[in-house]
Structure formats: structure tokens, C-alpha cells
Length: 437
Ligand SMILES: *Cc1c(COP(=O)(O)O)cnc(C)c1O
Image 1: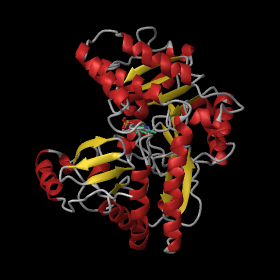
Image 2 (image 1 turned 90 degrees about the horizontal axis):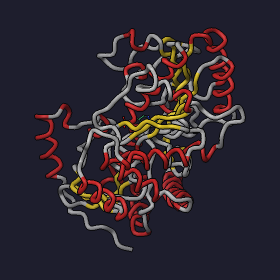
Image 3 (image 1 turned 120 degrees about the vertical axis):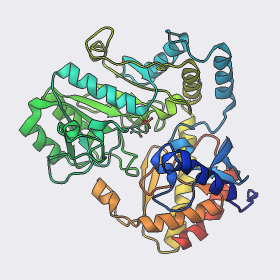
Image 4 (image 1 turned 30 degrees about the vertical axis):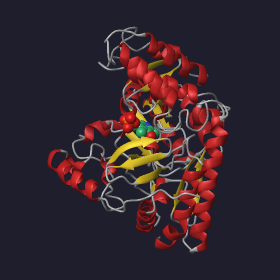
């Protein structure tokens, strides 16, 4: 059992954060990286390999963040590295069609049966933004229904998660989003079929689409209760609205075909549109939206809904994504689930031994540990947890060489590269972290 040698200094990360703050707001290019939810100084990572991150002070950390999902095969997987090197050697970007885009689109279409066509974009945000525009263009309606606690990227119209009651007209969550941008967004509590039925009974004819995370992972992992996905399909079909399944996090992560592959196509039918990102980019900026061909035909140049991107389908990103998806074979998923189960069981045992209330929730190999006793079904449930206890737990794990997601509202991610040595470091760190919590 070898424990990684830690230099036990974080001086270089501290120094880099100070420099970063001078030239980058908050020192980070995506807010959650700043550790505001857990306090302390984020580690600046210099390199990564397999399940390991190495920070700028030379500390080796087991990675349970996996770049927020994409690194499903582990860092610098040799097949992906070869694909990237080969693609980069041919040129970085052409601004023309290229073969790699076709191969990546074919791979996605082959895996997710209801997806007949996809368009490649560069981020999950672009994918959901474009799917919403397409749904509005296709239906000729404006209203979008989303669920509190579901994150769909930083799209103006979808930055509305607050709101209580059955059908609140959402106010924006962010400064800089005009109220008009969220005026056509209705936010409902997740997993609440009665609220869904009520809003469709009142306004069904105005609703262009319901967008949902296929299995939410952005309020911690909160899978749909039995019958919820089916209810989404039933009520949208009955009122001529589209169902958009956001699989940016779950796509190719929960199974070969994402959450859809795990839960199965709902009895009432498949979603109309899907969004993908994270795993399908293999760590590069690649994402996609797709679905029924008759809907996708409304996109320019075939149809009137405009959507474009200078770097969409970038050949290096497409090669990384394709190599990653090809590595996501049928046998990868049971391995990921076995690895995640070892970690979650050990964490739960350590927390139980210290009398720390907690509950573990799953979507495939994605899981999160809520620091509260009762199951979490909604965003309100997720918020009612002891985030300070998570912060203490997080920092004890980090000090012992394990990098968890730096927030109690995130999923933990494993990769195919997490081996016995990495698991040993985690299980060795857990008892003291549970005590700290
Ligand atoms: C990460 C995520 C997004 C946004 O993707 P970006 O690439 O960060 O823009 C959208 N939806 C879900 C479900 C996500 O997890």
C-alpha cells in the first residue's frame, strides 16, 4: 500500500492565485474553481496522468473531479493522446467540413437511438442554448419549463433556478440577465409531477419545451423518481411541446448511451432533443445537440433557425471525443460502478463511524454524498444539508491527497484509470476526514 509523497506545501498555488487575481476576476475562469463554497486556496494543477493530478508544488492528488466529468478514461489515456497528436499534426482548424466531425456524429447517433442527427458545438452552454432556440423555432411558442436545481450552462433564459410555489415566473439568478430574458421561463420543483400537470393544464398551449437534466447532477445527484421521466414525455406530447433531455453530464457517463441507456426509453416515448458535452469532448471543447431529424431540419442552412460556430466540430476536439467514446466500451461501465461503490461505501462507513448524518445518491457511477439524513428529491432538499461539514471533510481529504469536487452540490466522478493504489489513498484518508466533518 503506497501513499503518495506529499510535499505538504501549497506555496506555489497560493502565489499563482495571487497573480491570477490581478488579471482574472477571482483568479479563475469558472467560478466554482475558486473554492468559495469550501474556503481555502484552489490547487493549480500542473499535470495529470491516469487517476492522478499533480499540483504546482508537486503534490500528487487522487482525482475525483475528472474535469467535472470528461476524463472518464483517466488523464492522458494513450489512445486519446495518439488521436489528438495525429489530428493536430494534420492542422488545428479548417473552417470547412472535415471527416472527424462525421465520425463523431455517427458515433453519437449509433449510441443514442432516438438521436437521428446532431450538430456539434463547443460547449454544453451552446448546446442547450441552441436546443432551446430550435424548440422555440420549431413549435412557434416561447415558454420554456425548467426545474429548480437543474443547471443547463450559463444561458440567459436558463439562469433561473429560484422560485417557489407551483409555477413561479422566474427571476434571473444572475445580474446582467434582463428580467425579459427569463420572463418566458417557468421553474418547477424537480420530481413533482403534480406541479408539472398543473402548469400544463394552465398554459400548455404556450409551452415550447420542457428541459431537464436527464438525471440531475448539478444539485448533487438527484435521480428522477420512478415515473417522472415518463410523466415529462406524457404531458409534453399531450400539449405539443418538445422534451429536451440535457445529457451534458450523464451522456456516455451513466452508460454507453447515457442516462437514456440506463433508465430506458420512457413508456410514453423518447425525448425529442438531447444535449451532450463533457465526456464526448474527451477533455477538449466539444459538445452537441441533436434528436429527431424533422426537428433538426429546422436548423440553418436547411431551415430558418440560425446557429453557427467558428470552431464547431474542431478537428482536434472531434478526434479526442471520438477516441474517448470508442474507449467507452460496454465493459467500462461495470468497472466504473464497482470503483465508485468501493469509494462511496468506504466514505459512508467512515461517516457513520463518526456519527455524521449523510445520504448517498446515485446515477450510474455518478454519486454524491449529501450531508443530511434524509433522501434528496428536490433542490430544496439538497440545500437543507450541512455544507460546513462538507467543507471540513473536503479539506481533510485534500490534505490527505484526494481532490473531491469543491462543493456539496456536485457529483463525484471516477474514471477507468482509478486503480487499487488510488483507492488505497482514498480509503486511508477517509476516517480522519469523517472525524473532521
Ligand atoms: C456542464 C453542464 C452544462 C454546461 O456545459 P459547459 O460545457 O460548461 O457550458 C450544461 N448542462 C449540464 C447538465 C451540465 O452538467
